[in-house]
Image (cartoon, rainbow, N blue to C red; front, side, top):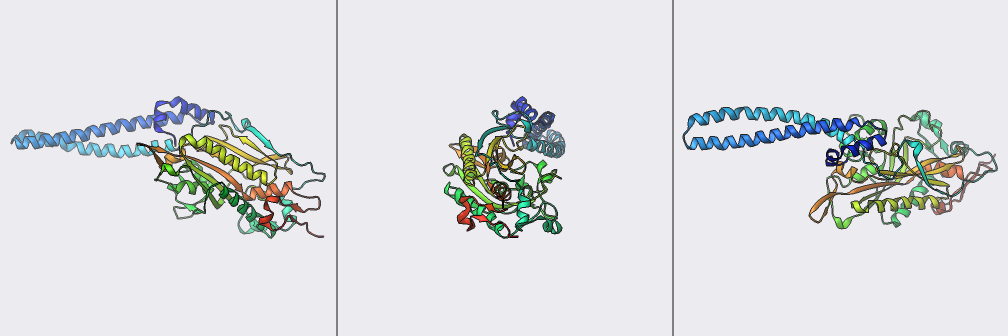
Length: 425
């Protein structure tokens, strides 16, 4: 969440940010109204407590002086104060709950250099590689893989529902080859590998994402205060919740290796074929805790890591700076890497790199000590590789006329084969 002091002292900046994101700026006025009422009532209670303490002193003094009449008057006056304090405390709790909900739902302040507007304003920063001009009619990844008997979404839909899959044979090997390739690459960059819990409590998740995103994004375990993670980013962020990271240890660079689970609500009828948009997938995530002055340098570092990975995998792709209306609430800036899909004749998102500044750290109470001052760290996250989407992209770009699939050279030592052979008639 953003600093409450910033909201109080510069509400116009916060409102402008809401407008740029296509959100209702009236939320800011509502929040400030609740905050003002909360602060005034808190001050009133502080005065009442002070008055109660002063009266107690006066009662003791009157008793010492054996002035029973004055003591009785003061005792009578003091009796009403605790009741009023109790009434105010109940109202304070209600106000604080309403205020804090609105406060936590306000989006991060978007970086001033990103495009303003909806997704149509997204800006292509750079294109890497050239899409191949196929001399035969290209197929999408689902048709290619099903023809090779390496993917079965029909059976998966029977036993689990839409957007699930069975990977088979060489495709399983390719999936783990991508994971191991990414792990080796990231380890060489100095990251600590972490396999996190695949489930988190609601209050822990709330440290990394806004509450409004829960129902539409992730699965809840029935009758348990547990949710399946939609990304290891949330579990990695939680590792230092309510902790102070020694300044000498910053930046802390960790990589999460996990299966991820997402509802993909609101995407009915979109990408239902194949494994591009699924409820379950594997991902290698990069995550950084750092000092505020280093966060944009770390952003470039993370983004360059992903660009190097994508180059190694020999796919055509581009980097896209997302607009204010297309980034998530927690991010100040996001750059997507989009791979080329020849069957669709367009680029599609394969991963993203985001700087969340101190937004998650404030929600999760993650700090470091800068001399005599406690400060919130900045957090950044980046998809090193999401394997199912990357598989789809690799398959489509490396398909051959006979139905075989070439494997990128960087993966040969992990797969043990250089191509997926076509099925013989």
